[in-house]
Amino acid sequence: MDHCQRERKSSRRSFLTSQLRWLSAAAGAALLLPLIRFTGYRVKPKPRHVTVNKLPGSLTPHTDRDFILFVFENGPVAVARRCTHLGCRVNYRRELDIIECPCHQSRFSPLGVRRAGPATADLPTFPVRELRDEQGRLTGYEVTL
Ligand code: FES
Image (spheres, rainbow, N blue to C red):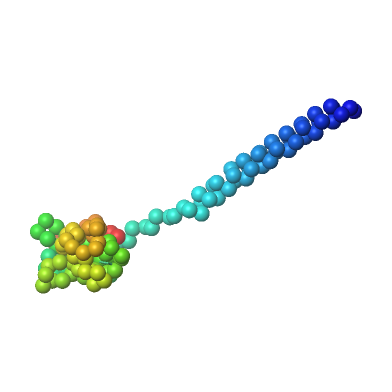
């Protein structure tokens, strides 16, 4: 084997080695990508149904841990109690007819519309379903969180 043949064989070997490295890297990435996607996957929480077995009014709302339920002439509205600023639990102030956050005094209308304060977004609302007995009388509400 002369010098030229040895050199050609050596360059072929280095070429094959580099190709093998690229293939290994591609195979590793192909296996790793689904794993990375899997670890970032979040299961959406199931909706939670809360039954309110009383009939609140617009000025005497029902206050739950996660929502305040008002019943207006147009129908019931369940407003989230989690402030859109930093997440404190808001309260309804009947004397002012507003929802107020105790942390930084953001204020919202009973429909959850932002009126003042550092919060920049309205309070979210939840779907409400009326519950009726066999005679069709209203017995309560079901709020879906
Ligand atoms: S957390 Fe409600 S105003 Fe800041």
